[in-house]
Image (cartoon, rainbow, N blue to C red):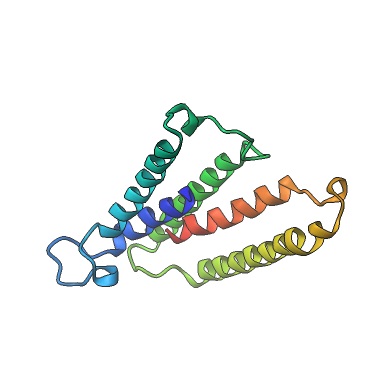
Length: 160
């Protein structure tokens, strides 16, 4: 969810209509409505959790581990910001032409295809293969999942 928010705020910081511009904003909504709705959604989730439990400590205490890989959020953030950094360098080197060079667009297309193939493989493992196996024989590949997360995060960072 944080990756989606980061991508939204990074990508639409420059693409939305400026104040005083006659161009319509996305979805023809007033400036900042989508951002406010996203932030209010997060606040609403926290408020609902507090209302359901009536305890602030329950918001931070997890009853079961959420991640088998505690380093995964750092992989996501590092790949995302690396993508943003690389994308900005390429755009800077183009001297504001607004269009990335064709070789860079080709690399992004191959990266998207790679991410798609990795996601298909992950879905096949989780939905088709693992349910038919005993618990001790199930395929669990944390390194594979970290690489998948990094590739997708990097792609969204470059596109931001």
